[in-house]
Image 1 (cartoon, rainbow, N blue to C red):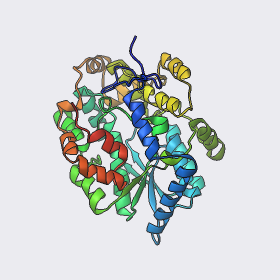
Image 2 (cartoon, rainbow, N blue to C red):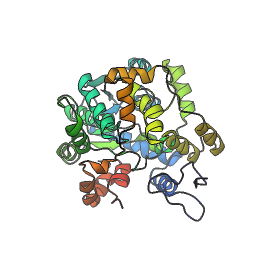
Image 3 (tube, one colour):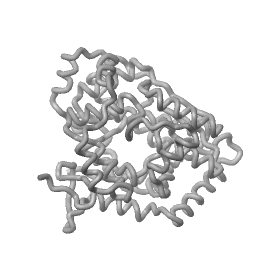
Length: 377
């Protein structure tokens, strides 16, 4: 039997995990620290109202006072609604990696049309993006989806800088998603460049990567703040889904992160089969900590296999140009980690005091400071 946290579902195979005398893991304690810093209820609402008032004040005279990332998912759809309800003038921003599901695209349109919110979309060249995916599959690391996360972050900053907007509203919520352990997921612009340089066949011409100079420019010169309103909100995922369905005819797409076809393949097939991990553990544990799911229910759900959309595996193989044999070879390549490639990790560690100040000023998310600047053993 694997040693498991007495509060959540994290077990001894999770990178850098420790357990205290009560059998509670360090990740639960980390979330407690975040809960103290980012309260919900009346206190959280008061802080959020003050933040929103500041956004309105700073955005006076501009067409938009903030940008909000949208994916067609539950969190981002609700966030756009909440911004409009609170009197903000958001510009919705979408990074299209050309793997969107039809449901996600329709969800974005339904929500934005009804709310009267403009959309800024950045579309990467599909052949180029598929080449990046193939590079990561060839590299053998579990971070195949990091180009999507970096692409969205870059697109948000690009849109904000273009329109002179000082606030990026992000949909992350540690109470329903948790914070992914570093050994399970790593991302930075240098890492993407390093993997692609070694294994890519096409030039990265349209992919919006984030080199360090851009990261620092948006932070120090443009002073674009990262705001995560869900960190201050009493947010129940099931209630929000019901609300969105009723209000916008929004459709549920089957699970967290499944609104994008490659992301669905990544979570439902690649990570469980190739790396023997199940990222549902993160979301279920977060819901258990926040009282939205019982530990018993979470354990039961983890016994069920992840939902894999019929024909999705064949679609991915065909689109990426793999025969069955080639794909099997990819699945059996030696496993590597971000440590086998060039990254900014050591630079982030050296700049830890600087990023602490940036996090306190909301110029980087506090979770970035917690995870990426901590020296690894």
